[in-house]
Length: 214
Image (cartoon, rainbow, N blue to C red; front, side, top):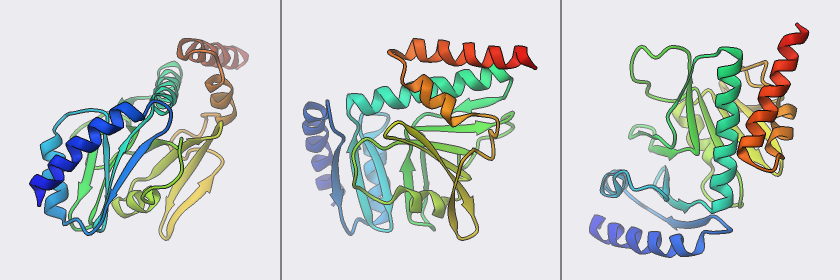
């Protein structure tokens, strides 16, 4: 079965590369065994462009559009500039593949971060970031919940939202627990700048003014 999956994945990747300029392209496969999911991820290797999500036998291949990638890179640059400016240790892991067979879940977020000094390789990120550009697909919050990711941040329709893990699932918060001083309204204003570079400059300028006032 894995050879057929690999062939399907190659065809899907080729089609997605041609079509994904403006909308995210998704393909769903059902009743996929864990072993086939792992083989598919291994066969893909480090090939970028298609992210794989797995939830209890449901598998999703998603090729993000250029707009999706631009937004996630802009947001990542802002988060990293914020941490650098205010002196927070922040380690980025990109679209790191996080998976667990007992939980029958696997994900590749748009961006992942660990906060604080890294003493050993982490098993899950502290923060996973998702840009929601087109609707539909696997319930990623359920994937993240099952794997115990403390915070999931989503950027959608010009707004940054925080999902904070509780015992019974995620609670929507107005601020991050891990980075409580990060102002989502400021991030939204910077995201609206004409370029990524201007967005970072605007953030650094606003943070500098705030530090001077203190």
